[in-house]
Length: 319
Image (tube, one colour):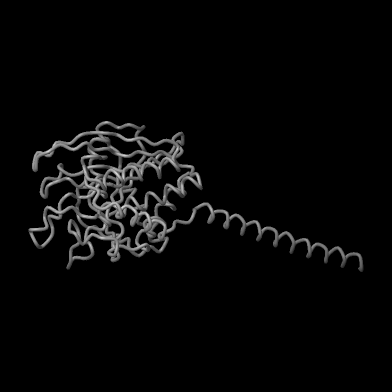
């Protein structure tokens, strides 16, 4: 009887050890899954927003434009596998003059099977045509939200991709000439994405995500309607992921239909493209868009962080 009891006790202890080891293994697996998504710093992204604004207005042909171009190229050269510019010209048929413009392209893991494009426009509007006082209409804007915010998120994502290579390949495109347009003439906007899509310099990516006006302190992202028409599955995937991550700015209701850089990507290259944009800046009762009030104090690191968290989980969730 004594020997039998000893064997029984040993079996019980062995079962406990096996259960404990199994539990630890499961814990390690889940911990590993969580650690596969790197952290995104909204504070660092906001520093990038302020840095761009420190150059002043970045409308084509300005001193701030040239300084910002040099800065952006330096940043991508420090992180990307390859970097180049895509030059093009634009004749302004409405106000006169010609512009020498350039898209900035940076690639990360270009040999990966799955490829996505992340884009934002880096130029700022040469005119404050939404100012209440018409005397200010010819003044260029700083473009903290409309210009710098999307670029800021992408610059911080570039650092993340450099430190934590992803399974998916990522092409970053900073489009030029997005904000040279005239109200009511959609195709006078988004000149850089039109040129890029018509002269595609990379293999066609699986899909694209465009960031525009993503820094508003009063952040609210309903689903942009062109995006839902062009890429409904991608829209549902992103907004459901935002809900899962408890990102309150993302609203699954339909919002405005906006002509932005995502539309030419679909129209001319058939790249399914989604626009993440908060057009009511700051809200429906007040407007900083295309005014001299579009300054860094109207934006927040927390807003940039919500967008960055969503994109890191999207990128690192692709196998």
